[in-house]
Length: 439
Ligand code: ASP
Image (cartoon, rainbow, N blue to C red; front, top):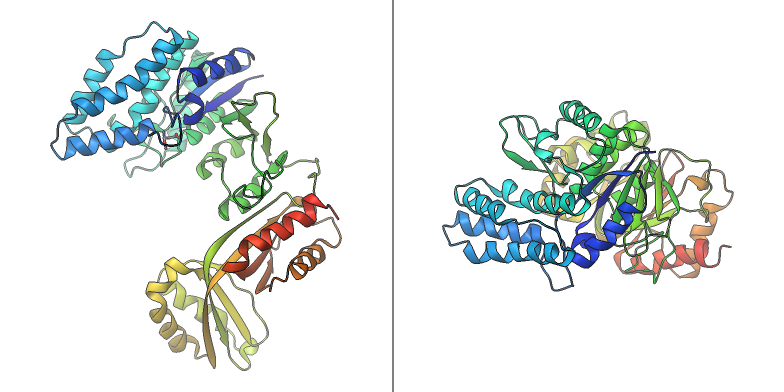
């Protein structure tokens, strides 16, 4: 068995957390490749090292002295090194980083040093080899991640290195300059290493015990999802539920490697398994619920619309012309409604309206704002009778007016539109009926 383990910043914020991580790694000899993030917040008012590094770079770019800011970052690492009694001195590294940043090495370089240094500390602490991510993760000349070049470099290096620490979040362009992924990108590094290592599992360790059935800011102590498929995850993540960087799915999914989300503070909890496909049924008919506020609807009616070939295309063209992406398009015989994101739509609203009148000549056009969309997702829905009935009777009992219904053609999800004001109440009603009462 070969496992790739990635630890998030909150799991590596100080020596105490670092030691817990060390225990987790040592307790299982299959955990052979370790991907650390930069040290995160030690308490709610604290600052992540990555943010400190961005500030450091801004100071340098505006010609200010960086001595104090750099020393503050160094002390975060020195505290960890001292707390773990590791024999490591980062003075030279910090001198080099200070010079590079002053000489304009750039924002990505500065930010990447958080992971780079944490990788150095982790490798010294575990007594295993360190692989600089810049040597194995490649971006192309347009700054896009180069999956094929990376996989070649990575697989080759890992073949020769049976155990190693590889820092998350960054790689390099062909000319050697450093480039980072977007924020939270150490998740992607973990997935890339798992692919290159042909790992059996990618363990992603964080500070929660996996993916939850609903948002804990709405539902108090929601149940955990034990197993979720990539497709279900995509539906929920799109609606705002997230524990993982979205781009971390592709490399492992391609190789059929499952992801296991685990909690550093509760290592015995099995966490959540994210898999391509499974025979395991969800504990509840639904796998998860997620939603977002802030949508608008544009409803159009036109007599005999149904028989006018190309009508839908003309309406959608008006949105495309303004570069607005469309969420859902439920339709009737002589009506159709287009759901869009409010913040994308509002500034271009009148251009869209005139476009629709010009292209499609509707009889009536009506815009509404303040709508929320809720996705009820579950692979179990396809084979369970009455799921839709349960959703809508729960909403009716909670006195919620349903403004839109859309069932994805895969029968993996039902999307429900409600007023923004009913959003939390609707999620609670759906959660209760499927999870609490399990009617
Ligand atoms: N340290 C980086 C960030 O704060 C990357 C990561 O943690 O995944 O976004």
